[in-house]
Length: 125
Image (cartoon, rainbow, N blue to C red; front, side):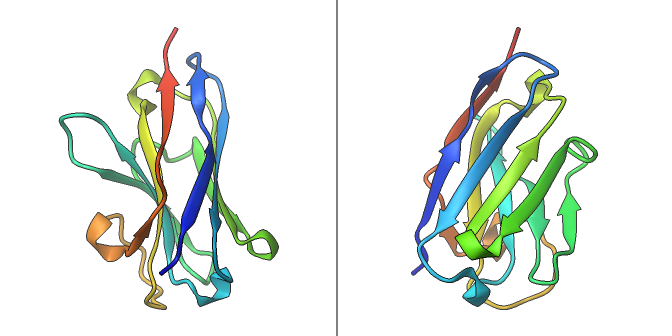
């Protein structure tokens, strides 16, 4: 089982930036696709960004052009750079990874096996 340890998050004003990190307990060359999800109370978990081992990426409409998913393989760490944040981006962000080496780019939670503990992002003035 892969353990994912998250850091980052916090509160920021609209237009601000934050970076989330997610460090895996294993060599991530053994991990398939990786993603970030946002959870808001009363709503379904939403996939916001996903990358596959080929470094291809996909973003939800609400974050395209604002968020960037990236990975530092030497550190086994996944990042989510969030720029020009809006109040609608508020939520609990979780990283996720799949054990299956697969090159599709789903934004659905059932495509992922292991999850980080979550970190809160609040965007408000």
